Length: 389
View 1: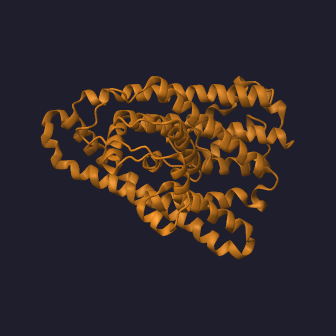
View 2: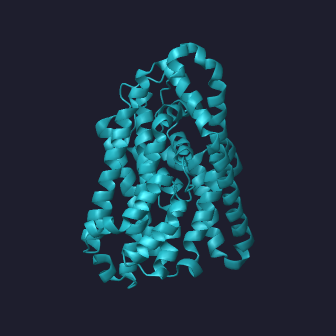
View 3: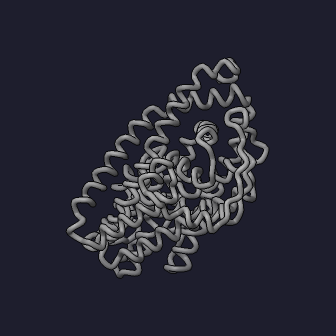
């Protein structure tokens, strides 16, 4: 409203929004690196996962990939960014076509430190995966470094919490600047984006978890699953935090879905760290929206790049409200968007981010419970009578 009233004069508080964006960009690289390394280590710890690891990890990554595929498909069909003019906030840039071979070569950094300094997210992901896997293979020798990475991840998540405390002020400045320079009509355009996210989240839960996982893979009732997972999903909706919902998720898994404690205590905490179905779907839609708004033509290789990078970067994403803002910034970097364009997109979506965050967190938690039910079924740690009652 302030942007509409004061018009271009609202640019006097633009520095608040710019500072908020700088804070986000400040933590993106270290957050992605340490949480990804820490996430890989936690996934492969034999004492923690044992024989459950391959099935759990494989199903989590598969459902995340399906989620982002649904998001990208919906964004390509509904085209929420077409007709949205953000050029008044950030200049449009024509992305030069980069050969696929060059992109693939760029994933391997010549200098990992330089890649971090330059914010080369794909190269950072590649190097972080190598570090995480190498720490697993050297066993006890690598434990000090693994402990350091875990502590570093906790520190970065704490900093993330602090930055998100300033989100209301940053959001106000960004939204006011957008409304003042591009007009209030630009904010109304976010409704198509929100509609795409709502449809995508519903489609993913019903199709992927209610039908594919429950009905096709497990021969179980999808209705019974959603009834059993209801309390946890409602808690996730109200808190926007998978971590805060974890105790309720474990209770629902054991008391409503028939998942034995040995599975619930390993699969669900892991899911709160690496399973981000709703977040991945949202990031995919926003990335395509941003490209459409700035007139960046995405090739099939770009869509594959978005899907792959989102799936990998979502491993270890902070299970706290608003964490997707950091993930969006990282993924948009991979398709060549400038910091100014990133800032414009974040300002555009912040007005509706909270309710959408609540929705996608519910999808994240529902996915955790679905995977835990599947793994328990496959491992013989499942009580069908509890599930069906």
